[in-house]
Image 1: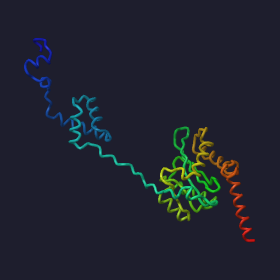
Image 2 (image 1 turned 60 degrees about the vertical axis):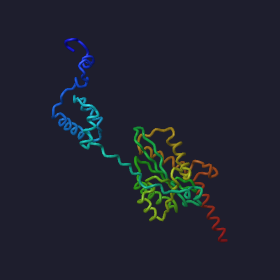
Image 3 (image 1 turned 135 degrees about the horizontal axis):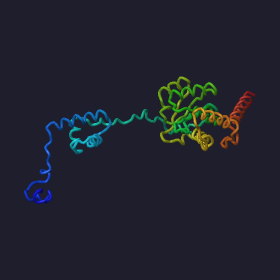
Image 4 (image 1 turned 180 degrees about the vertical axis):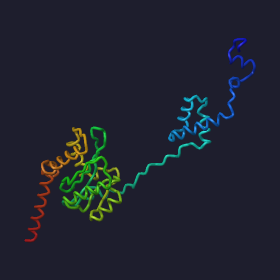
Length: 278
């Protein structure tokens, strides 16, 4: 090549030698041992990385290795990541169609309550949840609680407060949210003499009274306002709840407010009792 100024391809063809043999450079005997040592160090520093990422680091450091070699050594050293474990899904859905508002309708005040969440974000992007509890027969919102996160324990504390203020329902209806189906909460409800029932999975229409209540709150409270803190959300929700119960006419109640409808039904009940006694 130097004497006749010909290319490597032509020179190798003339002497019958493969070009890869001509380019071969002997590797020191301890090269692979040093490579493995360095590969292990990088793997320990980056335990969630695979061999492809480690190969890129080695090449950047100047190691003359290809990806296949690193893959072979990676497997030989058993550096593969353990298989991902599926995330637990918690308790399976336990509701059914028998607990829908059509098959299990409310018949009087404090017969059936329902509860559900509204999920929104404050101006800083952080989540905020509002737990709403309502009486299905009168449509009265018995209480709303706002917080960044609400688990079964917080649900129980909120129910304790509304039970003390409004009495206890015989039944409380919910979807299959993990906060509602938690054994701890269900055991506590049973101690209170309240039966928890659950609608079928992915069937929010079966909890229509609470869904309608949440929809009104979402439109009138969260539809066009920006909130900066959980406290601000709680104050506005409390004000709206008072308005909803006492000043906002409800079409399904004949244009009466939930509070006025509840009062009318109580008066009718007393009149019927008086008439029956006569």
